[in-house]
Length: 214
Length: 196
Image 1 (spheres, helix red, strand yellow):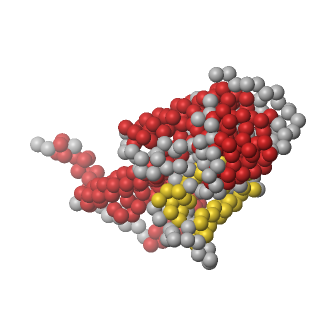
Image 2: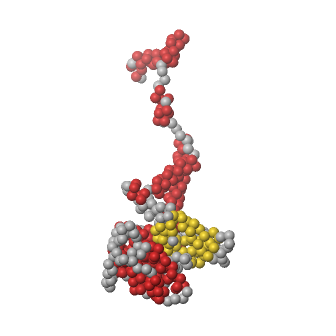
Image 3: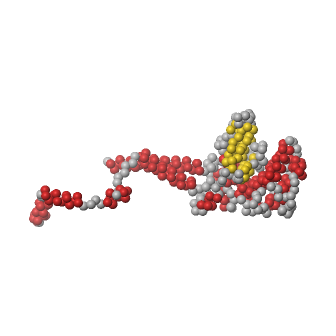
């Protein structure tokens, strides 16, 4: 009699524990996987594969995860998100090939610049690094100009002129402020940049200028 | 014919064994005094003895389930702390290497958006997992200016504002490349101790 009662209790306890374990594992999986809002398998699986590929290639996977989350947040469909993540991985890979062993931030900025329309050959000029300095500001301003429809060659010439002259972040920043202000007042983007770059003081050139190939 | 008839000693032994043993009071007192004089076995009644002594434990089904859930919770927590935010395992990596990759949010950055007519403004970006409800801006006392101060890691951050449900860029920040989803983003460069 006692034996039967004990067995019954044991069965109930095991069942209850099983249900709790299953729900805890499920809740935990949902909490820790940032891609949980995507359907398991299919697109989510492809994104996870792309992130694994990035890690295996020594590239940061965080920009890919961020792009996927951005797509989810903007309610893009799964295929579009996969396409955007795949594109970002491609640009990260190209940026690594062009810029060499830079840190993740600069690599992401370089990839974004390629995404904005800069050519890999144009980016190659930035491969010889200035010691103790990164080119984040130059890349961000350059990408912005391309987004604002400044002709690609003019944007490239202006940025490389400043960079070769050893311009600091503040110089790039004020160029952006002035050009953006002129464009918002109706000036042609290319003209606005040409006008402003002429006003920017030059310095002794620490890096020899090489025209890009291709 | 039984075995007992064949072996008369068996009957005698049985009879002797079933006979009550009569001892006198003095003998009983001597035996009990000797028993009481023996010291108690310390290991049996000490702390260790109490811990290792087997005993029946009764557990209700609810208590059993809670105990199991607690153990699972500990396992889940252990699993969480051994993986970084990329979901990569940190087990086996040197502590210094893991620590050096942790982002340092030591720079407070102010986000400002001017929208006198808006009723809700959020900033959404790579620093908050692109969560459209996580970081609201507060309306200033004068009305049209919305602000929020956020601790951000040094580096390049992509973001946008969501104004009454509509995506909008920051007019005071450079544009990021096309996002691929039909909405533009802005870029903020955060340097240690300062911000754009």
